[in-house]
Image 1 (cartoon, helix red, strand yellow):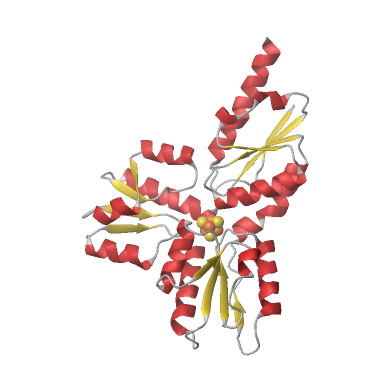
Image 2 (cartoon, rainbow, N blue to C red):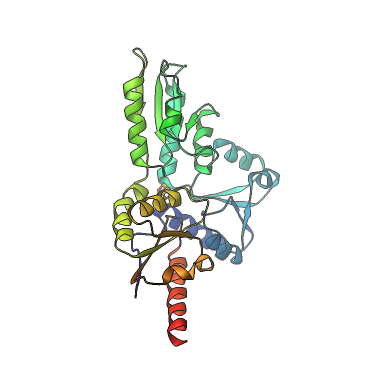
Amino acid sequence: MKIEIDNGSGFCHGVVTAIHKAEEELAKGGPLYCLGDIVHNNREVDRLCELGLITIDHEQFNQLHDAKVLLRAHGEPPSTYETARRNNIEIIDATCPVVLKLQQRINEAYNTKPDPEAQIVIFGKNGHAEVLGLVGQTQGKAIVIESLEEAKQLDMSKSIFLFSQTTKSLEEFRKIVEYIKQHISNGATFEYADTICRQVANRIPNIRKFAAAHDLVFFVSGKKSSNGRIFFHECQTVNPNTCFIDSAREIDWNLLKDVQSIGICGATSTPKWLMESIQKAIIDKLGDSEGR
Ligand code: SF4
């Protein structure tokens, strides 16, 4: 039996940097808060919690004073920085540079658009932390669309600036661009920026190849991970025998019957150690059943 971990899966640069910053700060001692889960993976959140990281939500953040708070890779809207200033909160800013650049571009588009009626549109998931940070650059005025179907509801008589959350599907984004190009009214303008992170988009061909090469695939991710859903869908398309799990506890051992090769892969928020622990659990289980 071959049990292989996908080399291309695991934390992206943004997440690696955020976790390093958290570990560095925790090593200095004193309480360190993190606004929201540092990564969409409960196992990694638990590991950092054991090192002393305290995860808080926005309500708790608003009540906090004279403390140190880490902002994760997803970024935050300007209002978070204002609260920090008011409450004497020291910010450890781990916003991913790719997200930061996108925030700046949206902010600039919103503040310099010559046509006050022009719409800033973000292709992203409503309520997702990164999207809240992006919408915050437009004083809450940006319109969020989640799909091509929602793009069809846009007012094509007004100019459109289109951006994308960094972890959305490039394929769907291109379809939206084509649709708007074809339907925008004469007199209105359409500008767009492909702001999808290549740490996600470039992994797709590799993960498809990896999933297709195994009899059974365990896709490991937190349930809240946006790119986790995209990668899982890609794996399932090429290999219907792909299972979504968040830890070894979720493995259905019956699936291991009659398979010769198992692949283990994951999202940009999936730690390598978690994929290794799943590989080990499978090896141990197989050893047990052979020994019986
Ligand atoms: S997926 Fe890309 S944009 Fe998002 S945190 Fe990772 S490197 Fe940054």
